[in-house]
Image (cartoon, rainbow, N blue to C red):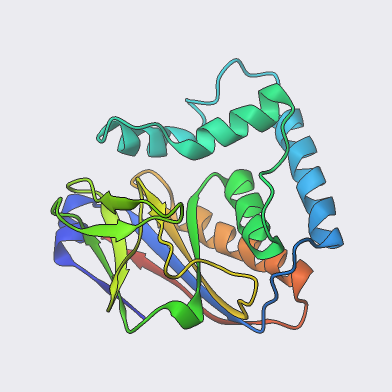
Amino acid sequence: MLKVSEEWKREYPGAHVGIMTMRGVENPPSCPALELEKKQLEDDLRTLFGGRSSLKDLEPIRAYQDYYKRFKKTYHVLHQLESIIFKGKSVPRAAALVEAMFAAELRNMLLTAGHDLDSVKGPLKLDIAQGHEKYVRINGSEQILKTRDMFISDSEGVISSVIYGPDLRTMINPGTTSVIFTVYAVQGVSEHALRQHLNGIEANVKLIAPNCSTETMLVFSAD
């Protein structure tokens, strides 16, 4: 399912990556049960963290911030959480299957990418970038990877990276019936937290497609 490079293990000791594949899923424009979960999520986040002046020292946000600082970037999930908690915004709108992932990502604060499994070609590989690899991001722009950034590729090329996110070629689409979720758990994020997050994504997807099945749920560790 996923080949892990020795370079990744040496560069990021203590890091983990989670993989989950599900079949028989659906991706409607919206899902009433998921809308309720999203509303509960927004209420929970504001209750838990609304009294804080900042979220930057909150784990696992701090672990991701430490990673992103290497590349002079800020963890985008932090901005999304700040918008919901401090500015009264809602969970970003998307088709239901993507929203299921977003909701779990915001609740658990772990970086996640989703892909149409039938669009993924051949075995996956987890590696660190040399700075010449490029791919087309989900927004349609071509992107060269940052040197030393974590990324996952299939036989046709990069499908996601930590800094720049998922690709266009394998994106979840209206006809998606099989899906793969990949979670980058950087140094400082525990395997237990990662497994809980995968379970949370699974539960959200089953709100949309109760009869879907989880084919694979695996965690790969650098240690």
